[in-house]
Length: 284
Image 1 (tube, rainbow, N blue to C red):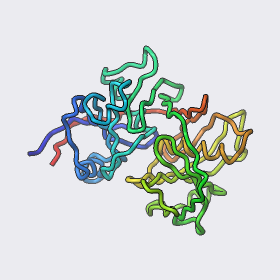
Image 2: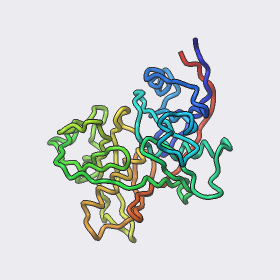
Image 3: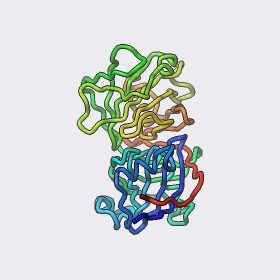
C-alpha cells in the first residue's frame, strides 16, 4: 500500500540529501525506494538519504549509546554508508531547526555507523569532529578517464574509506571525466571514495594549506562535494608535504569551500549546511 512520508531537501556545498524524519524507526526503505527518492528526474533528487531516527529505535544505535539521534545514511543507490561529513552537518541543522536538539549548551553528539561524532558551530556554519584517521601506504593505482596513465593513490580512512590521487595541475583536474567510475588496482573490498587533488601554488599561505578537489563517491558518482573526502584529501596532501605541513587547510570543491583542521590526533571538518525546502511524497 502506498505510504506518504514527510521530507526536507538540504545540502552542504552542493552535496545534497533528502532528509526523512523517522524518530521512532517505523519506516523501512528498500534500496529501490531510496534510489527513486534520489533520482533527479523521477524523484526528489539527491546524493543520498538522511533518515533521522533515535538511536534507541535502530539496531545500529546500540553502538552509539551516547547519542540520542542516529544518522541512517544511505547512498543514492540504496547502499548504507559509514559516514558523511556534509550530510552530518545537514542532519544537525535539521535537528536544530526542528527543535529536536540544541547546540547552545555544548557539542551535539550524533550516532553514525562510524561511531559517535560531535557537532559544534563554526565561522563557516557547523564543524564536525570526524575523529582519528588511518593512512594505508599499500601500493594502489587509480585509472580514470581523461588523465592517461594510472596514477598512485594514498588510502585514508576517516571512518569511511578514501583513496586520494595527486594531479599536477588544474587543467588535468578539469579534464577528468568522472561520468565513468575510476578503476582501482587492487580494488578495495568494500569500495572507496576517490579524490583527485591539486595543491595550490604556493601550497601554504599564512599557515593555511590550500588545495582543489574533485571526487567520485561510491554508490553515487561524481558529487559537487564530499565532506569526508575533503578531510581525506587534506590529510593526504599533509602526509605528502611532510613534517612542516600545516594543521589547517582550505579545500575548494565544485560546490564551494570547506575547512579542515587537525588537532590532538583528530581531524575536524567545517562548512555550511542549508535546508532548501520541505514537502511530502508518496512511496510506491
